[in-house]
Amino acid sequence: MNYEFLPSVAAPLARVIQEFHKLPGIGPKSAQRLAYYLIRMPAEEAQSLAEAILAVKERVTFCNICQNITENSPCYLCSHESRDRSRICVVEEPMDVLSLERTQAYKGLYHVLHGVISPASGIGPENLKIRELLERLKGNDVQEIILATNPSLEGESTAMYVHRLLSPLVSHITRLARGLPVGSDLEYADEVTLSRALEGRQEV
Amino acid sequence: MNYEFLPSVAAPLARVIQEFHKLPGIGPKSAQRLAYYLIRMPAEEAQSLAEAILAVKERVTFCNICQNITENSPCYLCSHESRDRSRICVVEEPMDVLSLERTQAYKGLYHVLHGVISPASGIGPENLKIRELLERLKGNDVQEIILATNPSLEGESTAMYVHRLLSPLVSHITRLARGLPVGSDLEYADEVTLSRALEGRQEV
Image (cartoon, rainbow over all chains, first blue to last red; front, side, top):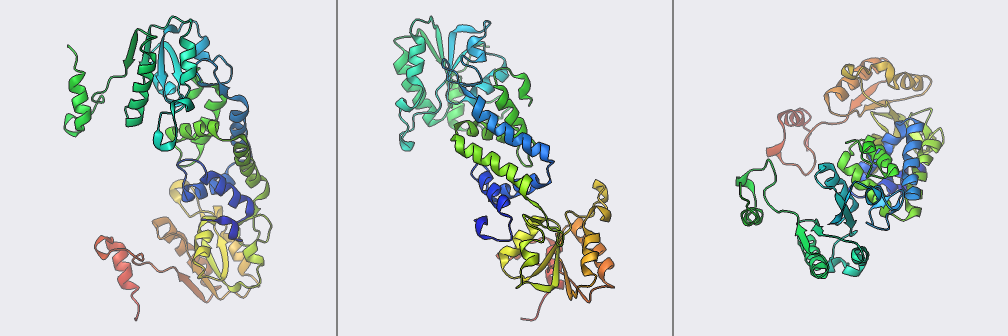
């Protein structure tokens, strides 16, 4: 839908609808709803939203150690004294760090690859932060690398690639367990997940 | 999810996630995805989005005739010479004007109520732009009022209320036809729609 050519739509409104529509997961109807919502919003709230958007671009940068997003480099996690420096958990995206931190089950460091190897999209290992990971291992006593890329085709092949690269350098390279999600039902599990759950079965 | 208390999340990021989460139809996960998308967006695009949001608040106002949103009052539609001034189509929201304009089947004027009567939400007739509609009818030769509120419970009762109020003033008061949506299937139509389609049947 092109609103520019509908003269009954005020130009600034047409523009904001198109800007919202560019964002991921926001279709033309949602963009329209957001734009109309904006009109009824108090001016301070709209101001606050616009400022927050600009602040992210101005103040957020990447940690020069773990490549995660941060306000100050090195980031909070890399510079925190209580974290276990002998473990690095390798993830695809900054969001994954957030998910893992929420579990409160991991006290080591992270490394964000910023993507996966995907020949179909023209993304090779050189486009990921793999070189930075190799640099980190030099001179640091890292005991374990946890490969926490997604259990998808691309996540798995990226994990395999990183594993091959790091196996001469680190003694323990592990992968997150694949199995039945907690609270799920055996009846509805797919065969691949179920066979992985069998393979990875543990002594009670 | 409160990101403020997760120190591993950069503060500006936590803030923009919360700002996005306030918007309608954007849950915590979508807000998070949008925020991370923002980080990878070119700075100019983020700037453009922020400016578009501010421009809507600064430059969009309401037409003092039809109450629709506009940059200049009276709006494009109210001031356009080719529009039929003897017809006014009464709608709930500015978005409805857009939907009707897209049909290119209506050449009259509009009146936006900015809501529906909803006792449950504490919205009475005095909260809508009904007084402004009555004012418009004074001194203007309006032949037809088309009640185009939604075919929902609240839309119907608002239409009935407006109908009662205007019937002494305007000769023709019509309501949009209720019936089967074009391209739909009789088998899947609900009974109410089907009985309305029967009631409103027309000579071929």
